[in-house]
Every structure is written in C-alpha cells, then in structure tokens.
Amino acid sequence: MKKESLFHGVKRVRVSDFVIAFIILILSLTCIIPFIHIAAKSISSNTAVLSKTVYLWPKGINFEAYASVFRDGQLTHSMVYTVWMTFLFTVIGMIVTILAAYPLARKELKGRAFFAFLLMFTMYFSAGLIPEYLLYKDLGLLNSMWVLVLPLCFSPYNMLIMRSFIRSTIPDSLYEAANLDGANHFQILVRVVLPLSKPILATLSLFYAVGRWNAYADAKYYITTKALQPLQYLLSNMVLNSGQDAISLSEAAAVESTPEVLQAAVVMFATLPIIMIYPFVQKYFVQGTMIGAVKG
Image 1 (cartoon, one colour):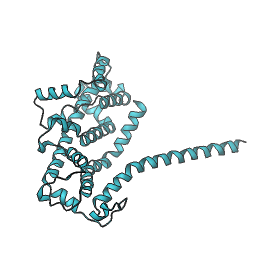
Image 2 (cartoon, rainbow, N blue to C red; image 1 turned 90 degrees about the vertical axis):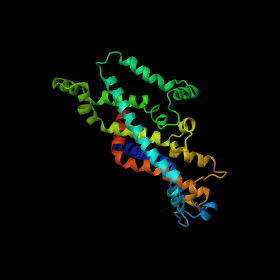
Image 3 (cartoon, rainbow, N blue to C red; image 1 turned 30 degrees about the vertical axis):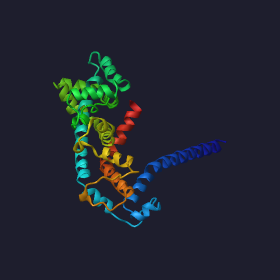
Image 4 (cartoon, helix red, strand yellow; image 1 turned 135 degrees about the vertical axis):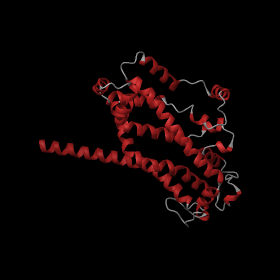
C-alpha cells in the first residue's frame, strides 16, 4: 500500500509538472511567434509578403527594407536620440528611486509611513491630461527632451519594490556595524546597500529602460518638433497610417520595399536594441524579480 501511494504521488507531480511546462510553452510561443513572423517578413521579398505566404520563414530573402531604414536620416537620428533619452531617463529614475527608497526603509526616519503614503497616493490619483499639459507649458518643458524624461522618471511602484528589497535583505547588524565605523548615511548607502542590491538595481533599471523605450503617448501630446520625436512615436504613425501613404521616409532612402515589409523592418529596428540588453542583466533580473516576489 505504501509503495502504491508513493507511486501515485510521484505520478501526480509529474503530470502537474507536464501541465505547467505545457502552459509555459504556450505562453512563450505567443510572445515568440509574432516576433519571428515580423522578422521573417522584414527580410522577405515584396511579392511573397503581398501574397501572404510568409509565416515563420522568410521567402526570397531581401534586405532592401533595412537598407532603406539606415539610409533614412530621420529614423537613424530618432534611434540615436531615443537611446540617449532612454539612458538619461533610466539613470535619473534610478537615482531618484534609490534616494527615496533608502530613507523610507530605515526605521530611524520619523514619519516614514506618512511620506510613503504621499508617494503611493500618486499611483492611484492624478490631475489629468489637461492640467499636466498646462503645468508643463508653464514650466517651459513642451517641445523639449525633458518633457519625456522628468515627469515620469520617478515610479512609486519601483520605489516600493526597492524599499521592500532593502528592508528584507539588508540586516540591521550591517547598519550598526557601519555606524560604529563612523560611516554616515551616504557612505552606508554607497558602500553597504548598493553593492548588496545589484539584483534589484538591474531589475528596476530594465523596468525603467523598457518603459521609456516603448512609450510614445507623451510624445504625441507634448512634442511637435520632428527632431525630438522618439522612435516608437514614428513607428506608431507608420502603423496607424498603414492604409494610406504610410511610409514617409526621406527621398535619400530610395524606398523600394512595400509599406508592409518596411513596417516590419522598422519594428525590428526599434525592438532589437532593447532586446540586446536583456542577456547582460538576465541573471540579476530573474534574481531580483524572485526576491521581490517572495520577500516583498
């Protein structure tokens, strides 16, 4: 009887593991297959794409769409501009998040619950689009890169994750030892907290970078100068205008690809940079996410 019950228990675990693995596989495919489809279209011939015969493998391999993208001055300028803007946004966002999370994680701070409530309040309530527009206009931020960087560079949600990580990971004994050595709060933050917080720093940095890279709605509202429009905003315009004369590249680009092929190439052009970053932070990203999920 004991052997049979043990056998059935092992069998149930294996079946459940198989079901979970199957579900994860299906979810992964829903993310990967569209990307592969777009990649295949971007290097396929115009005839194959127009005939709707390209699925997961390119037909009539042709890189003219990518050549047109790189010859176009607006897209290449927008790429460099978006990379620089995303870098600034991530650095400023991480600095502000760290400087807010560290004191709120320390028990010595009086009124920390009140300050945390003020920051969390902004997650659920906002003034709305029109008051925000008028505020940015009065501050002189419209039609500048800073209107895309400063308003959203602080995320209360990311700050909450950072605070939870510090409170659950950094023991009080380390603070006490640093205080006995004569370290001030800034030295404790730089020499004790941050070196032990690499997983969560990598995780939140990726959150900030991906969030800014993929955002385009604020550029639609606050930016009218073409030189200041991020890459995702240009891509959005191409997709929305796909039924019309969608692809408005410069004449120097000498477009020979159909709009559908060129759109696929631009999507890949805008997606690959942020994907290339992930392998370098994957270890820290997974570790930081798991710590935040378990201990937060």
